[in-house]
Structures are given as C-alpha cells and as structure tokens.
Length: 334
Image (tube, rainbow, N blue to C red):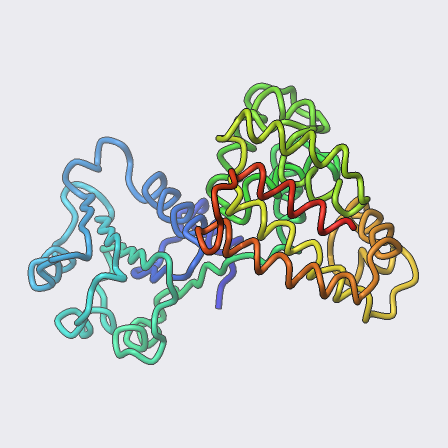
C-alpha cells in the first residue's frame, strides 16, 4: 500500500492511477491528494469539458457509470471526482467498473470522516484492478509535534518546542486547521525563521500567556495565582476558551501524570522518548510528578469528572464558568 508521500510524488510526476479510493477519519490528506490531482491531471483549458465533480448523497450511480466510461474531449484523460462517498449505501451499479476501469478516466473517490469497510465488494473490486486505496488516519497526540515540524521544514521554517505545544494545545488534532494557521505564518514571516510564541500571538491570535496550555501548566506547577489570572482572562474573553474544552485539557494532564508514575522513567530525556513529546513538555511533566503523587492524582481525576458534569449543567447551581473553574483549580491544587 502506497503512503501519502509516494502518492503525492507520482501525481507530481504526472503518473496517474485509474482509481483513487481515499478514505479515513482525517480529511486533510484526502483533500490534499484530491486537490493535487485536480491541479495536475488536466491543463486549465481542458477542465471545462473533462472534469466532473459529483456528490454521494442522492447520486444516480447509473449516470455516474456513464460518465466514467466516456472518453476525454481533446485531452489525454478525463477526471471524475466523487465527494462524500461515505453517503453511498449501495455500490452495486459501479462495482464492475471498479474492477475494470477505463484507462483514460481518473476516478477519485473521497470517503471522508470514517474508514471504508474493506470487506465490501466495491473496495475489493478496486483492489482487484490495482486501484490506489489510501487510508487517512487521525494522528495521535504524540505525533502532532513531529507533523508540525515536518510541515514547516518542507517550507524552510522551524518552530520552538514551546510554540509548537502552544499551537497544538490551542487547535488540537485538526490537521486542516493546523495547516491553515501554519500557512499564515509562512506567508508573513521570512524563510528560515524559527517560529516562537510571539509570532503565534501576533499572527494567529493565540495568547502566549493566557491559553489552555498555560492554564494546565500553571496547575501542574501548583501556581494558583497564575491559574486564577488565566481564568480571569477567559472570563473577560469568552471566545478564547470554553470550560467544556478546558476541563478535558486538564484531565489529560492528570491522566498522563498517572501513567508516568507507573513507568520506569528517571529523567526528562527518557520521558521524551517514551511519550514521543518534545523535551519542553517532558521536563514540565517530570516537575509535576514531584508535586502530584498517585493518590492525589486519582482524587483529581474523580474531581474532574464531577466538574465536567457541572460544566454541562448537572448539579451546577448558579455558578458561572469562571467560578466553576476557580473552585476546580483550588481543589485540584490543595
């Protein structure tokens, strides 16, 4: 099975397969490969007559089959893109085509947000014809830092460990959003720049001092004063972070600390390797281990479950989001 780099290289070399079945939970690479095929399969003047985009919901598969079998008009090939393929329930009508496609048609199937059932006949038919089957998997948390660094390195940029962590903590694992924000930075900054927290604050709008990562970091250090300052900032700037996002973020801190306590880890270098995180994060975790012992961590995890329910209206009373967070932080750190 080809990986994304191999697929991209072949497309850039104008080497096209008859069928691309792109599926999986992470839409970023599905969109990237599809856009690259659109850019390279046809010249701009050929697209009006030789590029067709259809959508899975309420699609007439017989009509699609007719389109797939057409020959290109004054071009080497035609391009047919099927979007939202996950909405198709019955593939029977085009299964024979998938096992024996027309050589002059490039057929791209975009099956986003979930994995295609590889037991289905249409997937097996695609494999029978040696069509490309690519699964775009969600990255794990410990893979995101490497992805950010790799993305920027390809564009001759670098990023500090703290800046990378700040960006990931604020945006999460949505690669499309991460890529969009990183693209902004590569446009406004000079090549060769090492991106830091100031760059992120000035160009993306994520405060280097008042963000979910810094709140969790303050709690990890048992810095109540700083924690309350950050909560006050969120109270005045409600769009910066919502309690339903902050509590899971704090939960992740204590869940990770509990795991580390039962690992045979002696220093930050070992922890960095074991968790596949940057050294900055590993160092912070090692310090937090000395502050929070397993018994307190277990109590905090239980407390976080309780306040997660409160944040969603269960036995909440009249407390504001900021009041709930202050109560929670006080109890977590005492």
